[in-house]
Length: 285
Image 1: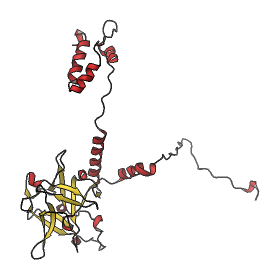
Image 2: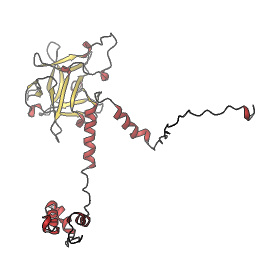
Image 3: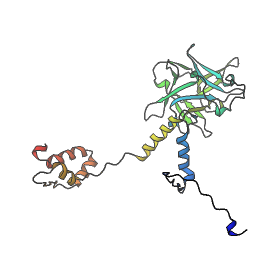
Image 4: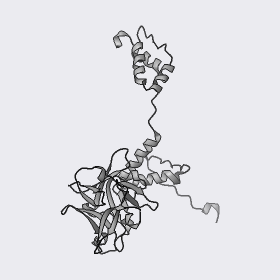
C-alpha cells in the first residue's frame, strides 16, 4: 500500500470558543502520599473507619467484641438504663443476604453508638451514651461497669491502647482493663477488673472518618509548631504612619539587641510598646 493510501489521522473535533485543556503533568512521587491524600479527601465523612492512633478516638464510636460464635456490640438500653452485650448476628440484612464481615459491620441503631469526648491535652477519654440521657460509662474499684452517671469524674476516664493488630484495649483509672467476662450460667457481662490484655479485653473500635481527619490535622499543626511572627519594618512603618515634618522619619537610636534580650526574658510586648511610644509625635500619642 502506498503512502497515499494511508488514511489521514483523525483529530478531536473542536468548536469555536472551546478552551484547550492542558494535560496535567504527573509529579514525581504522585503515586505515593499525594494520591493517598486525594483518596482520603474523597472519602465520605460519615464512613466508619478504624483508628490508627489513640488521639483519633473522638465523636460517634462503635465498639465490637469478636466473641464466638457471634460478635457482640456494647449497647445501652435507654429503657432499662443498663449496658447490654448485643449479638450482631441478630441484625440480619432485610434482603436475606449474608451478613457483612466483622470489620465491615457498622451500627444499625443509636443504642450501639457511644460518643467519645476528651479533655484537651489528656490521654484519657470519656464514653457517653448516644441516646438523649447522655450517661457516662464508668467502672468502680471492684470492677463493676455501669452507665448511670450524669457527670464525668475519675471513674469515667478510660485510656485507649491501640494494639499491634489494630484492636483497642480500654484501661480504667485503677489500671485494670475493660473485658467481656463469662459469669455463672454461661451469660456474658462487661467488667473492668482484668489485670492483663487477653482475648476478652480486645475490641474492634470504629469512628467516623471526619473525626479521624480532624485529629490528624490537629496533630499536624502541633508538629509544625506556631507560625513565626513576621519581621516588622520599623522604618517603613514610621514613614507611612508616624512621619511628620515634611515626611521626616524618626527611628529609635536603641539597638535591636534590646528587643532580642526582651524576647528571651518574656517581656517583648512591653519593650515594643515602649519603643514605639518614643517614636511617635504628640499628635499620635
